[in-house]
Length: 289
Image 1 (cartoon, one colour):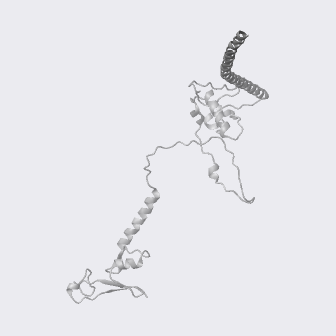
Image 2 (cartoon, helix red, strand yellow):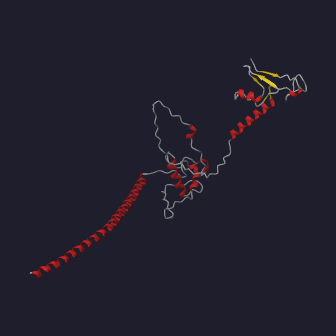
Image 3 (cartoon, one colour):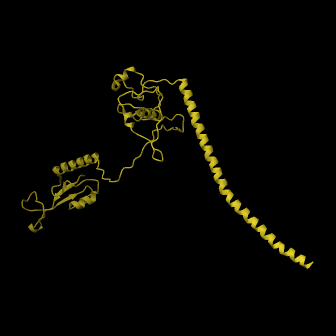
């Protein structure tokens, strides 16, 4: 059984409602709806309360018993516009200052722990790909200086004679920063620019995986000189630590001597007072004899 709609027949003109009667022009009669269960509804709010949220009655005309096509189209357009506006996102109106979060440039070790040997770890290949860099990006590191606690400029280390820069405007400071960055961020061995054509046109033949320096070879003599330099630095550090320890011991000794000297002086005064007290007793004994 389906829903039924019918018009109430009005006997008097004063009982006419708001809707025109289909068979009596000029007379108005209210419409009634009959559900399959036999429940009768005389208004749209009653029908909406009965159906609840199971059906949208926003485009339903209770007077004619039909759905309005024009309202349905406008409702669909409104839903489509709302979904499109939500997809675009809302503007960020947050006025809080951004917080700088610098990531570590050092490679951090990762330990993989699995509960079962057959487990397979899925990785995204796109995340493993390194971000592209600009050509001669190492030149951005030029002009950066370090200062000590006394705000004095720290002298940079001298590069070996075998390390020579390649590229326009490549100085020793830029080369030092580029080599230090390659040591921290790259896992490949540092050999320099092996191609000889890079000197003619570095913008075309430059190997971006290597720093801006010519190809070099580390010899046994270089290793021996570096070992001697490390030994000298360690010796100076040992001497400085020893001098600091001796100065600390002397300071503690000076702080400990002052209380000891004061205690010794007090003891000598007590002994002198006791001797003075004993002398009158001896004089009295001599007089008695």
